[in-house]
Amino acid sequence: MKICVGLSGGVDSSVAALLLKQQGYDVFAMFMQNWHDTEGTLHGDCEWEEDRLVAEMVAKKIGIPFHFVDLSDEYRRRVVDYMFSEYEQGRTPNPDVLCNREIKFDAFLDAALKLGADMVATGHYCRKEEFKADDGSTVYRILEGTDPGKDQSYFLCQLSQEQLSRAMFPIGHLLKKEVRRIAAEAALPSATKKDSQGICFVGKVDLPEFLKQKLKSSKGNIVEVYPAFYEGNPHYRFQKETLSGLTANGAEANLVTGYISEDKCTGTLSSNCYDPARIALLTDETLERLATPYRYDSIRFVTETYRSGRKHVKKTRWKANPWGKIIGEHDGAQFFTIGQRHGLNVGGHDNSLFVIGTDIESNTVYAGEGHTHPGLSGSCLMIAAGQEHWIREDLKMTMGEIRRYRIRIRYRQPLQDGWLIQRPGGLFILFDEPQRGITPGQFAVCYAPDDEMILSGVIR
Image 1 (cartoon, rainbow, N blue to C red):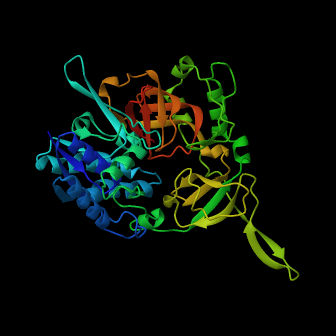
Image 2 (cartoon, rainbow, N blue to C red; image 1 turned 180 degrees about the vertical axis):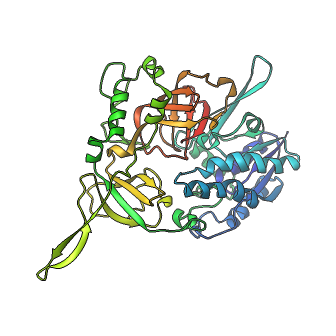
Image 3 (cartoon, helix red, strand yellow; image 1 turned 120 degrees about the vertical axis):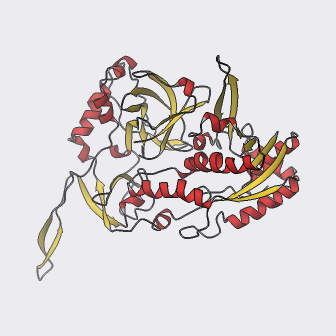
């Protein structure tokens, strides 16, 4: 069997190539260049020239042929242009997921097949299995990588059965430290090379500067939303009453997340025990309302005049509003994403400020203070009809069906328990525990209890 390894110059793909060679496969390497521009990138990070040089050295060390392919036009058209379009609409895309679906296992795969490859191998930390269905067809399963700190199955959540039939992941069963050890023992040139960061094949970037290549800057207000806003807010009250009506024990539903990061929580996390029978009674309209983010355009500001100083100079200021306050300016709402902490550049707060909403039309960024701010949490999301991608098509849900899965809404997030509800308008996910920073444009990915990745979809 002839295998093409996507050799990036990093240690993971290098060890993947080495292991396949040691296992007796006919292996060749191919390095893909997907980006030429340096505008917006941070100089010195993931420069493709250096990566290519290391990749060539690795191929020579292992003793396999080395090829080069330029896919920059495809990458710009199918990944970067999509990314710009999504940000322009106030959504936050995941270019790495798109890169795998559109480039590595599509355009790159086609180039590899033309060179005689039967399969394409990458250095992803994930596992692949297969079995025969009752009709004799082969069904491919993709599972989390063995190393919990490096699992990269999330980035492969949009692959199809056809793409998986040609894919190999030689290091998915290894821990990162084992990969480093194998590379060091084989004296591979990439053994001590740092892992790449940033956008796939672009590198580490100053995202606003990168986006400014096509998206115009425009000054707008940063509005801090006070917790008092939610006390009388109809949508907050609807969420509270509806979710409390779903609990199996009659308890009041918790609407605030305790999640801070991959390994931290506030200590106040409370799981909501929802009754599936009650969930089944929810109308499509109710589910859509549960999945709808808060809107803050009702917070309006008016000016008032006052006199200041001994000479009573007439000045103008914003009139105090009990729901919020204008606390700064930004260069464009499209450059911000829900849950973002850095980049607001506003001081004077005891706790961190987070982006809790953006309004592209009015060019306003809304922020909330602290991890437990109500606007930072959400309990339900929606994947619009036609946006669901079933990796296991044989497991598709029927209309009205409800299932339990484990879900993550961002890379490296600990898996979260929740209910999936299939309706004509789309697929709804109701989490046991409120989630921090549910972000439109990102991918929600669902896993079975045995670590198998089942489906994914773009959050509406």
